[in-house]
Length: 411
Image (cartoon, rainbow, N blue to C red; front, side):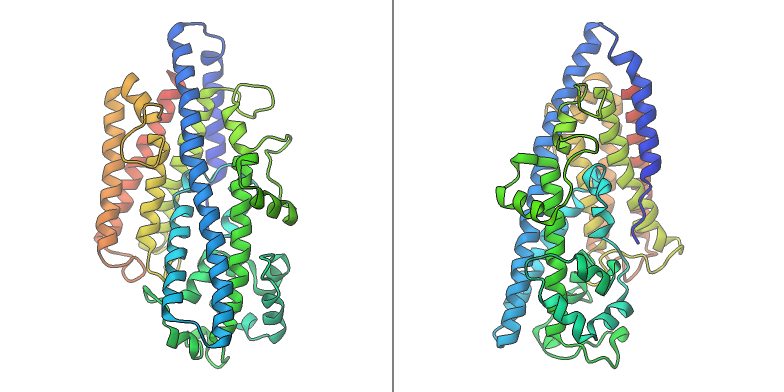
């Protein structure tokens, strides 16, 4: 299962809040006031141009994926499913997957508070348990009734470790390629399914049900952050599912909570606290996960099977999107240059040397992952020099991010 060290991030956030409280809020110096105003503008740019559009894309892509899988299930039964339909499914999955991975520098908040991660992103897939579940006609019948997307009952039927992206990935990808129509028309040949005669129809029934749950959870993320700005249909679906969407103890969306920092009702008491949240609970946390767990578990031999996206063989693409997520958080938008209202621009103004070093380490991490993407897939060779280079570069970026967070908290 995906393991993320949130407790340390939360502790560091708390320390940052304490460190800045006496400096930021009680000092009337014009320079401090200027910095506070800059941090407020940074937060607005970050929330509206990084978090909102990525969660909107994630909700849209997972909704399309669900619709396409329901259609694929129907077409399979009528003998009209084509390879083109499967390829379209795979392309939508990749787009949805990319949006999710690009959101991982802000897993704090709704994704954590409501257990959405790891609910939709747990690995490795327990193929033996899945094979057993799909062998049950009763379970298949129950899953087949979930075209409305609800899966609370199915969780108990197939097990939570089979839900989310990777359950679907197993059905529509194999060995780094789109699943072939011929393979779906035959009997599942994965070794965990030996002797069970699981058909493509049963697999698509499962994938469509899981995609419904994935869509609903991504709607929950979108509504939790955007509040009333989310599409009305998505809000209504989340209400129908009775999912919580507001910050604990209040009625604010997670976006409002950040944007209204220092005001009554927000859990954020200072703007430096917001910066610490973005940098430590967000960016540093995903650095530590990618280097120490997503790459490190397999590379160091701690858990050789702990490999993300093994069926599509897109682990390095996931990692690249994770570090791109950091870039967007630092640059204030989904681009390769810093917006005027961004953490990177703030650093460039107040500590140019630190800004240059941060950019260099960010560029180095992305470059290392670009090289890795073009080489042997991680699932094929998790001990490659490319894996080591990427891990080292991401660790160096993590160290610099924490240094930046400490500097902003103290200055």
